[in-house]
Image (cartoon, rainbow, N blue to C red):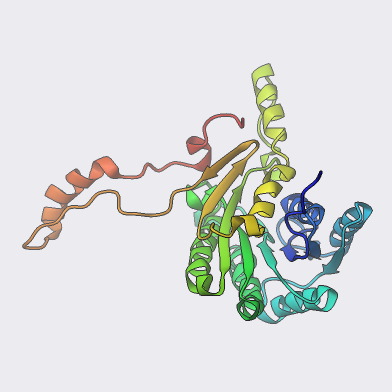
Amino acid sequence: MAGRPMLEGKVAVVTGAGGGIGRAIALAMARAGAKVLVNDLGVSVSGEGGSASPAEETKALIEKEAGVAAVNADSVSEWHSARRIMQSALDAFGRIDIVVNNAGILRDVIFHRMSPEDWLAVIDVHLNGSFFVSRAAAEHFRKQESGAYVHMTSTSGLIGNFGQANYAAAKLGIAALSKSIALDMQRFHVRSNCISPFAWSRMTGSIPAETPEQQARVARIREMTPEKNAPMAVFLASDAAQNVSGQIFATRHNEIFVMSQSRPLRGIHRAEGWTPEQIGEYAMPALASSFVPLERSGEVFSWDPV
C-alpha cells in the first residue's frame, strides 16, 4: 500500500522551471503531491530572448501525469516582479509552502576579459534573484510559521572553476544567503538549504569523446541527467526534512554529499602582536600546511560519477 505523497497539500514555486534541473524538480514535486507554480522567462543560457513556451511545456508535462500546475513568466531579478511570482502562486493555489531558487544564466568569460555587463547580468539573476524571491516568500512563511527554501548553488563557487568569476561569486553568495535565512527564520519553523547539482548539459558538451576511453567517460557523464537532482529537492522541501536546515548538499548521479562550510583550520598567536616581517617569518610557515589548494571543481571531484 502506497504511503501519503511527501508533498501532499503543499504549494511549490520553482523558478527557472522551463527546462533542465528546474523542470525535473517541478515534475518531481508534482509527482510528490505538490501544486507547482512553474516560473520561467524562456530565455537563452546567456539570458537573451524570452518565450513562455518552456514553462507551458513543463505545465503540460505535469498535467499529463494528472498533476496540478500554473505558469508565471515574471523575472526573478527585480523586486516587484519577484513579488508578482509569489502573488501568482497565491492567486492560483491560495498559499506558498516551498520555494526553489533555480533560475540562472551563464556569461562565462575569463576574469580579465569579463565586462561589467557580464558580471551584473549573472549577479542579478542568481544572487539578487534568489534574495528577491526568497524575501517575497518570507512574508507568507513567517505568517503561517512554516516553509522550506531550496537554493541551487554550485561547486564553481564552493570550490572553484575557470572563467566563471560572476557565476562562482553569485553561487557562493547564495550559500551564505541560505545560511542567513536558516538562522533568521528558524524561529518561524522555516528551513533553508542548498543543493549543488551535477548534470549533463550544453556546458559539458565540449568534453572530448574521440578515444574509446573518452567515449566511455562521456557516456557515464551523460547518465547524470537533471532528474538525478530532483529527489533531494523533494526531500528538503518535505516535512521529513524538518530537522535539516542551513546545509549544503551536492548531488552527483547516484552520490549524495554534504559539503563543508568555512571554519578555522589552524591558528597561531603571539602575545606581543605581529609585525609584517614576523608574519612572514613565523606565521606563514606555521599555517602553510593548512593552506587550501588552488583547485577546480573537477580536480576535487576527480572520479567518474558513480
